[in-house]
Image (tube, rainbow, N blue to C red):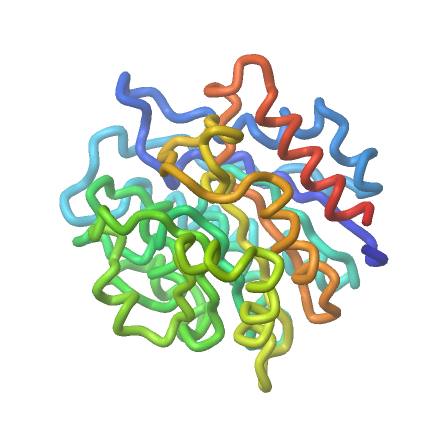
Amino acid sequence: MDRSLTIVGAPTSIGIKPYDNGTPRGLDQAPATFRRLGLATRIGAEDAGDVLPLPYRDFIRPAERPRNEAEVVSYSRALAERVAAVVGAGRFPLVLGGDCSIVLGSLLGLRRLDGRRVGLAYIDGHADFATPLESRTGSVASMCLGLAVGRGDTPLARLGDGPLVQPKDIALVGRRDEQEPWYGHDALHASAVLDLPDAAVRSTGYAQIAATVLERISAAGVDGFWIHLDADVLDPAVMPAVDSPEPGGPDVNELADLLAPLLRHPRALGMELTIYDPMLDPDEACGRRLVGLLEQLFRS
């Protein structure tokens, strides 16, 4: 990759439910773990520091509302400022989460640059298309793709002047949540989102499916596209340190085959990595695996 890279830390767990013991999840520790493992040096990136969240508040889920709704709104706006500054300076941001709710701030940051129409490659083990009423957990992470297209009666669905991204400009890749319809499947199937579940991708091949994804997310009228990568898209046999593992999925090399053409595309604007939980990775083997993946992608 020949563009200048900038790391932005998004150390937040406010968009996901607590552990069963009631304490916040350890996703906020992921950026520090990646730094300790030498990510910036290994991919040749500058480091723009962290965007810090407000404290976790909704340990008990509010009725029919997202957890930490006001806090995620505030965080999304703060992260948007950092992403907009990096992209506006002509650099490629790599946003290190944190939970999946960071996609809202990333997309909002791109929209703040001349009202750009952006595409989205959403590579995830789950659809994340629920509304606050449909979600079983109240976690923004379970509904953030739906919120990005304006689903749900919440300020999080109205962060921009209209939806942050249009369904017709989205490719959802790799989900394996067919048995969990509370992720918003009915609405997803009725939408214009290009839905490529893992079974369909595997039948075609991860490398071959990249062209299909690029055709959708870089269509005429799109000013560029963002890449969302949730670590739980990987097979839990190689990536167990995630909070909602689903059986199956690609290995690291298969995922690299999908991502490499997206990152090489001249209209790629940035990428985020979410849901890696260092608290579930005591020997940091999963962290090292993700750093190795990023080094393979950004040094090629």
